[in-house]
Image (cartoon, rainbow, N blue to C red):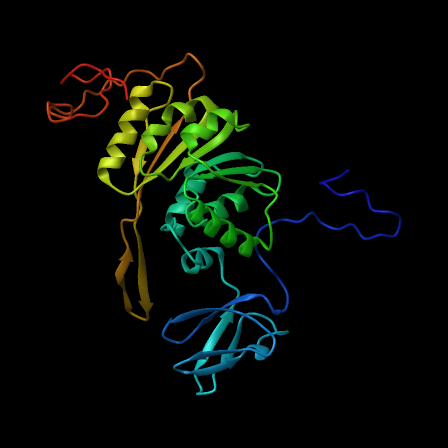
Length: 322
């Protein structure tokens, strides 16, 4: 067997393995999703169907005018408005698909994939599948030979995520296992052991640190995605006090476009600002702890008003567990 397929017989053209990338090529066909964009940047996502029409205030568009032709064309509505027609990119799909929970936006998904070093064939545990946005990115990154084990507490969110991911990939992705369960209860009893990466998109990711540490392989990476500064502080301090992880790294990203037209080169008036904070740390080998930080915390950092976990080097109070 080669790549999951039998060896081709004499005279048979070898077929490449299925990439499961969620990308379609060739002429547009009934059932394909298409993004229509007008001259002002207004976007509409439609699913093509033979004999169907798409209606806007700018007129109607015949689906048959697109079916059978290439993407990257200009189609004109019945009232003369022109639209660009392309299949949506993954970054466009995830922000327009149906959602229950808020989605992980493309700028944060890109940071997670790179900073958590998600690689083809990786075994990744995801806690908090939400609407399936990050699941889609992780599955493309690990490929059909990897494994993404997603845990979602809410059955309604899990169903939305399943529909969105299967719509993108055209069926059940062979690398995906979606469970309706609480990670802290289900992970210890699962087959997800010696995993390469864990991504936590939860309200209280610090509650999962112990079970994550048990599941991660030495050198593996945990990445937490949190929305507020209080969550950020709690998860960083919990990872720090645990002792089995490297010093956590915390950051956020902001994206600002630029207007470029002749001599008028300036920042756009709007930008994608804060969406979430990200935290990463690497798992130490069993019995090993990172070197103690030599830099003392700022005075008052762990004063009487601080109620969270205290690292051993804190000078404002005794160390505590998470």
